[in-house]
Image (cartoon, rainbow, N blue to C red; front, side, top):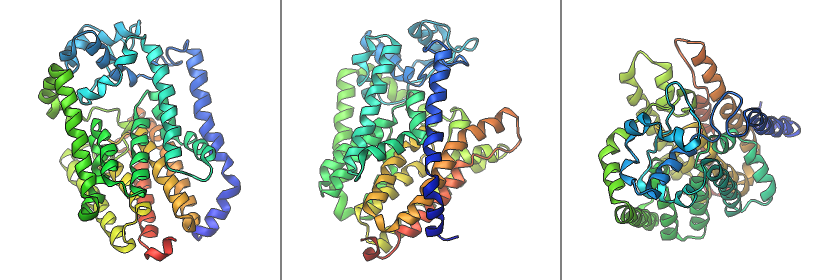
Length: 407
């Protein structure tokens, strides 16, 4: 079946994707209503990941920044349980650790004076605003339709419902694209530098810019300037937290205690697939990352490296090569998808099947993995990883066409 035939078959069925996407939001809302709105029907705190950012900002606001990374101490005193007002996570005292640099916690200090629940509501509204801003920065022909499809994408739902911060990253990526499309390389680097709160997300951008150093050296300079400024802010405003961050950096950088049902990257894939061979996890993940870099180089060489081609490659590579890419971070694919659809319309018969495959794979992967873990299967497959590997390769093949074919 050709791409064109597949796209033609899919078009009248796209409404199914919107219905499935809407179902996630409806089920979540009903679950919260049954749980009293501060938790869901299974006792999970609303937007639990937000608690990590909230508690760090609260400690700064209360004059205790040196305790941000003192996880055992905070767990022992039930600090987060005190903040939310109930014994969340009993009997083991669940804890959402703050692992980002100190400057990022400063962003949350204005809402740290509010209750946790109001802070979560405020940041949820900010997140949706950033999602809308990102779509507008990408300049789709029909922004409302692009936003609707973004909301039907499971990683976007995960970002909002988990209380995560990926909308900030998405807006930064969208800003980078908009500036690079206008040849404002230094400004693009400055905006990309905002991603230092999750530096692994810079991987794809660094590879892209490294393939064309003469064209993009100002981008790298801009990233460095932003990083220096953010580091200075940390050391000047919260020096105690900055020292604690440096002391715990190695431990936090190597942290791998995420719920594995939620981890969608090659490192997590091999950890689940080969649990008896931990010595192979990193080498295999590194091989996947190297293959991704090779694909980026190939696309650049064949296409000439226009921004509309290389930006989506950089987004996907940042996620593929990161050992910490969780399901919600795949929200960044929204930026790649909008650029591909709008800037390379001649390939829409290719993009539609690939988008559908990525949408289905990332919608199902966490739930399927959780079921496998719950039933204690000896070998567990995080299906979203091979699906995204296939999507990435097929997209690279389409992008690696002669430059005139992308007009």
